[in-house]
Length: 351
Image (cartoon, rainbow, N blue to C red; front, side, top):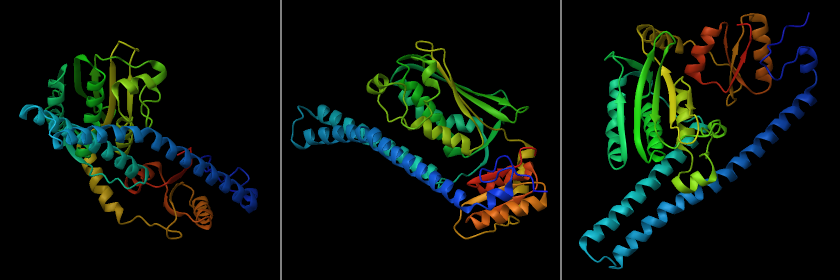
């Protein structure tokens, strides 16, 4: 009797003996996958250069232009000279923000972004974001309001700097597309669901339903006319999505369309006494993780309650150059996913 095959394992079929005895087909399939990955990487590289070249040149040209006017003595007064220098400084800050966004995307895609997950009170998070965003809001005809939960000690499990970056991105996006009106930032604890829902609600131009499914993709920003009018490389929301997912949450958008405003929302795991206990357990278990297989190979987490079949899967993976970590339950698997960030998870759907 042939061993049962995990439905989620792409290289295994129901007839595992046949699959493992045809190395030519396995090699061809792997070559096709590598070729597809190379083509996608080439497309993304071209897309990246096309979308960022203009955004990089615009603030750089502005900065150089204003500084050249000052150096050439073209200022009619000290006040005008000061204004030119302020404009050059604003351009340099915009350029720095764009470069930081590009570096964040690169670190995220390379798996080099580290997180410091800890207990963060929502009041602290809101205060940090308020300090950064209130100046920009005060310069526009927009009322910015933060609504904190009734429980003063309400907290989430997150990286403070990354969570702050997400909220600043969302508030900044709302400010960009809200010429006048209001922006409300609020947090809704849902301990029964294990998370806190954050919402950024604006009265701005809104988002058509057809565009809502793509705004979290890299370089997406509505349509071409929106990009020309409001600017931006379309990286902020893509970064926010990646950061939220790395911290164990989800992100989304709601809008009835043009002229009806927008609600951006995301969730983060709620902090409870049980979470604190789990953190201690994770730390104790970390030393027990045994990683086997060829050095340098991608890490695969094998989640399978049958020890015989689990061993079979790991042997085949080692033969194909992968490293493995084995666990017997979905609960243990989830803890390893959070801690080890494996490249692939082989999971029995029945678990």
